[in-house]
Image 1 (cartoon, rainbow, N blue to C red):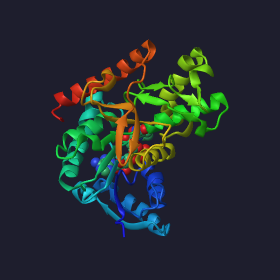
Image 2 (cartoon, helix red, strand yellow):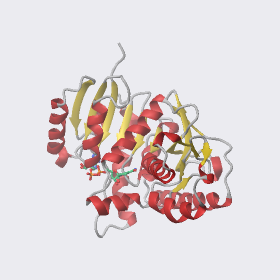
Image 3 (cartoon, rainbow, N blue to C red):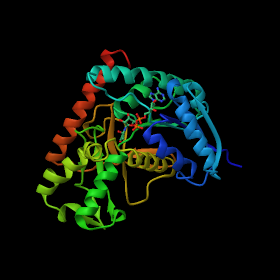
Length: 325
Ligand code: NAX
């Protein structure tokens, strides 16, 4: 019998956790049973205990194990998949350096714990912001885990872009393929539809340039802010759903004619400096990702990719100066 997939989830008492955990328990990653290891900070353990009670009350047939802890080494012990959702949000008066430093403390410790305790096959997906740089810190603090096992979530941006293009062209979401998010999960991200297809037809033949530049790109990049304004709190169910999509595709593979977007450790492809955790179009199979090679990058795309990558390079410099990597 196959052992359950052991999944560590950090930030289990948070809003994303509240959507994510129930879908994991319900089998959103596939037919394999799951063993959930919930990590929270000590003051939030009681709240997480309530979430654990509700998971039990769901009587999910695939939920083969459930544990709750405030110790990263216990949460990550033998983990096949680590979903790092918990992070320190930016609060009033915090500078960017304060934010990087507070998150640095979390992700250096979690990187070390993953290095020591995680299973040999572990895949680590960082949702907590600033996701790309948190993933970089985690990866750099887990030197024994292969670098290609770390990713940051840009799937929500990808999904938002797919949905916008589907709405604009009056097509079902499943008709949209080959969209790509490049760079950072931030307002500088670049949602590239220059290779995208709508039912096999080039998207660029169906939408005009003005819509792309004045509507599509700002809508996708600022969608998180728009959701906060409308809902009074940040995207949670869609972020949980994107985290599931990203993990499922990483473990199970993308289809033959499509790709997805993942922020992964750059090998220097497309002029992105080696080692930065930057979003690329990728295909996945057998638990491994590969950057889609040989795409033509026009001048507009080049300048947008370069701007977002420059932001990532500045974040890397800042965390180097803080001694976090
Ligand atoms: P919440 O503030 O509701 O929950 C975060 C939880 O993490 C809290 O319960 C907190 O106690 C816990 N936590 C903090 N430090 C921890 C640690 N060291 N170990 C374990 N748990 C810890 O935030 P939520 O709305 O759930 O969002 C979580 C993170 O996702 C935030 O950083 C948020 O900015 C980020 N997001 C990332 C997105 C993406 O596309 N990459 C989109 C949605 C979201 O904004």
